[in-house]
Length: 421
Image 1 (cartoon, rainbow, N blue to C red):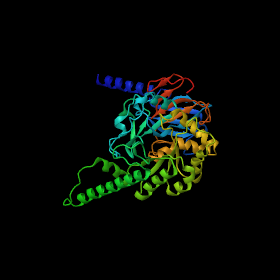
Image 2 (cartoon, rainbow, N blue to C red):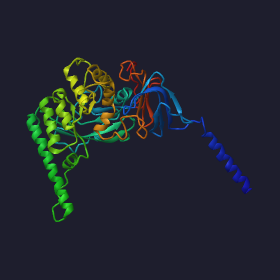
Image 3 (cartoon, rainbow, N blue to C red):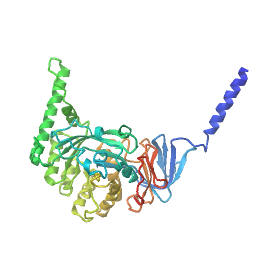
Image 4 (cartoon, helix red, strand yellow):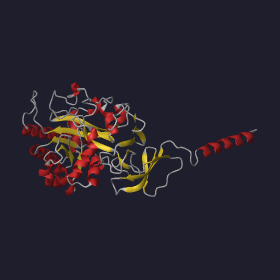
């Protein structure tokens, strides 16, 4: 009897093994074949294959074998790119089509709010998330607003759907704004006063860190009362977090550059309207620019568009954003085409939509290009030119899971996107 039981168990194991053999579907294993693959970190691959296994990219190349058991997606005549990264967004704060939420991303009781976290206030039910994923965006850096000099902490989120906690990827750093707005009580009234306030708060945060270090070295030194604002600003001084500075005019951008220089910050500019004037200085300083929004009403021949072209030409780091909902996420990919029209190489424009954003936030080891070991954030477009207007987003994957399918109408956020988007 015992021998018969062993034989029965062995037969069952053999049958289970045969069911998982060649040709049997394997969950989480996908091969995208035949498309024009743009890894971004390397040259395009005609007729390339991208293999996804368990949420990661396993292989990319022209001669990659399709693993047994893989779901095969034929992308012939299409393009395959990394997920697009929106480097500056207010999605989930300023909810699409609800004007009353327009100030929800600003805390205006005090001018310095480094302790305020964007992730705590996001509405994951904002329909703008559905439009973003249908536009090929797989990651957004969602920031607090620009009505206060220092509005809080940004959050990098992936378009996974579900709750805010499900979507969270990494801290997006801290937001500051060189902008004199309608005065609120105790708010600076000029741009110079804004700069002086921010500088003073960073200096105070440095003193707070010094006092903590002194206490840790010798308990006889008094420990300062805990200060969440200075703890957050301290992460800028230690370069643990990146600083995004809202600035557009030449003077605003010079203030942002001086903050980076004076405090040795890992800082970038978003908006950057005077990038053309300052391109050489930005490159010398090593300061990235997230340029945008570029709206449909803006002139395609505007000289301002030459700024990112020039900075990229020099070797500087350029990314694009549409600042949704102020600029629609759907226009983001087409922004790249506008810069190509101005002379930017198509490869640089595609990098500005993908890998460069990942580099700004130091998550390029995970996202931004199609490379083995990286997260399987992948977009399939309906034409071989990923920047062409006609190349509609067909399918989107985040961590190897499909989150959008144009043919079936599936969207992980639930909303059906209008035909032609």
